[in-house]
Image 1: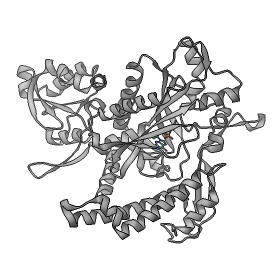
Image 2: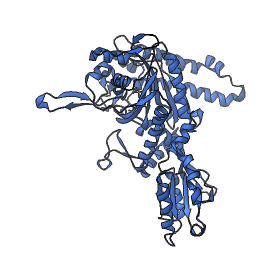
Image 3: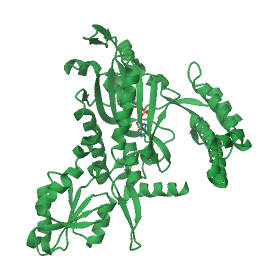
Image 4: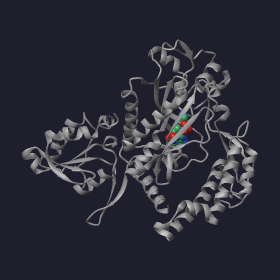
Length: 517
Ligand code: GAP
């Protein structure tokens, strides 16, 4: 585990050192859980967004995109339930003055019981080898049974307080924390305040105070921009059900436990698609979208074993089925995308609060109804993090040296081709520039002449550039160059005239999209 934490720390510093991600307002020592993307980060991020956008809008005739404003009419958030229900239960420790999410403290306590059980199982596995029967061990080992009972009791109480009538039972939550003897990790004491609800939306004001400014919110999800535009798009695009609306944009949440670099941020970006369907068909579409979205992730070639679904027991106020796609990060399997069957909750609420009729007339059944919705919602930043984590390698080379390489999928890499003149003379720089001038219209190229070739290769490996070409003496004679592959480090000579054909197909988003069909 400690080793994994070290790897994660290295990835975070690599992101800064190579221009992928910087702390926001770095010269002022940063701003909590807010980050800026640097010269390489923005390219990778744009490529992720393009891969998602094109897979939705180009590959589906019945999905169109929009770009709604971040500011929305404040009633939107009343209707969506965010003003009343988008809360985290918080608790403070009076000694350390630190604030925690009460639900997270309880979930961590449950995880401790699970860890204890797992450790007993691993110990026994080692002792008994092939003869080990896990089911029997779980059913008979006294320590496992004791911890399982503690886990089950806690899980039951937790479910009860989270699903209490009228919302989360805050007193019940505090009682669990006291009964379980949960201590503050900083002060080590149990001197807790009561649990309070804390709304995660950022507020600001529109208009000057003199003429009665109104409170508005920074959107906590992009989805509502789609719901309030449902009628506009359906009518102007003459869309027939089933159809989808896709959007990429910023979202803001005043997260209390903002941790793990860009995993949980206060300003982040979402790629959301709301798929409008006939009521009664939602569970079929939910299953279809689960499959489609998992395929999109696995298409990047990171190995099926690094993904799993986590179906929700506890559903959000709007959902009748929900799952997460989790990715194996260095700090465990973590949610990257949510797929939710949102019923007709949002459209009905907006109809109620706006007084507008939001319905679909189905020409096939001659009926009008409020469509149901399947939502796919993925965080760009979390996707970015999962790609960085999987691609980062410190590779031991046969000569004993270590190279740091990012095995980014070529179609997502910030720079696709680096061109180096072997030396700065004999017309080699000019020849290298000529190659770039020709290829820059097709993919992102970079010119590098500083330092010896080995160092230049290492710099390109560190930003995940899949191909490097070197212009040498022979190039000036026969118009061939050496082409080096990032992953195998193999080099071979190719004609300059062939470069585009060799590289373009491998580095284009189209190559990824074709594999989806
Ligand atoms: N419209 C539904 C919705 O917003 P969500 O599960 O709260 O659902 C969807 O968020 C995705 O947005 C998550 O799977 C995650 O990738 C991303 N996300 C949510 N909160 C985030 C945060 N604080 N920082 C970074 N990404 C976040």
